[in-house]
Image (cartoon, rainbow, N blue to C red; front, side, top):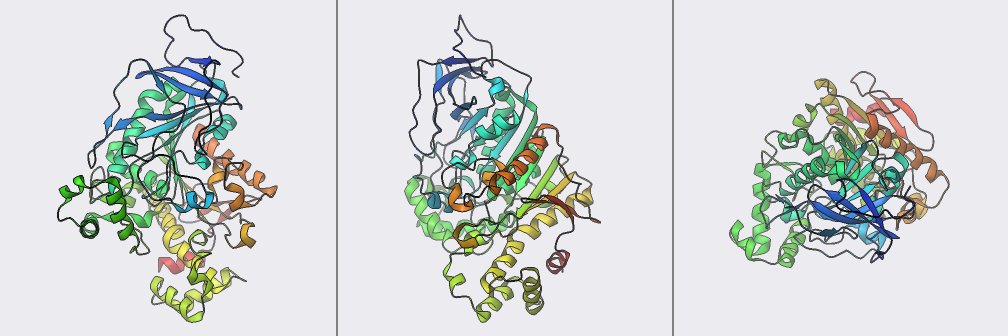
Length: 512
């Protein structure tokens, strides 16, 4: 615990924390965490000033890990003289507010193309003196590769750091046209550059560079899978936890070129180089125009193969990666996107059959009957959303687990089924509902709106966070590996359990 100010007499040793109660840091927005005093830390690149928090943890925010010109690969941040302020989050990549930010009612922090920064959250054991190197968790945020940031309050790493005695890192990377145009994969290369920064610097924060777990949700979940597929990431991480990966967003280079042509048309220019002369707002306007035309795959901006850092088909390459993978989905992913949509309000049998014919054109009657059997009491709209959940998330995650089982690479699978009572229960176990449970951040802004305030929330959070922390510490989880015979899957709920091949008939429907 941090108990008193530590006076400095000359330069500190690398990794030494110094409490400075004379330099209080105030909260400036919902994206900045409450603080009481500042911390100084010596790193290989120079001194940084972070904040000591009331719970005994420390936070170093807005640390620049690289710089990049528009449409150019990132260059590592150079060492600096003097003291670098790390008491507040840095700007985020230019974007329109995402669904999560809009629902939370949080104002977006400053935006800038110069956005390559990260936050580091350290446990009490490393504040005030170095201890045995701690496991490291690196979070990669979601947002369909077009919005989001590492500084979203739900991703604050202090609770995990304190509960698990781990170091948590949360990063920003380039999004949309700034990060994923044609096959340049700049956003993924940014993530790799951030992981290189972790390897160089994390020991100064009390972290163990030989025990790094990457984890992420949605686009972050598919990012960590894509990182497994990239030879450029070799040696930068050791374990992977992928939540609701949006694997369907991956695209090949031909599709990337096709969508780039549409973007040029929307931007009103003829050549890629002409985009350099446009303002960020003009690029965002063109981006909004093309995203509005998206199909179910939502692949206008996404990791692309073959492309920079991704020479092979992504899922197959990730299947061969030796790192231990945990992958899973929620039960009702697509209710987040469809529960309040006009289509849900006007759904009838004719419209439902049209949706199913777009997903399973040759098996519409069989599919509807199966979903009615597996989701008794659900409305026609909810049956459509259940099928969309399988199409977009769950069955793709199962295919990845199957490929890894065939390759003999270590894999565990989970299924998050706790259903939110909020809004009369229409959200169910929707996309992103598991994030505040994973971080054990039930008190962060907007969480109660999604989850309600029931006492069972803490029970679920205890279960999920404990498994994530166990996995980050030594690779252990409470359930059996995934294989093609038993297909053992862990169910996260108030009562957790190991299930053999949950819902096999739905799996067989999509396999066929």
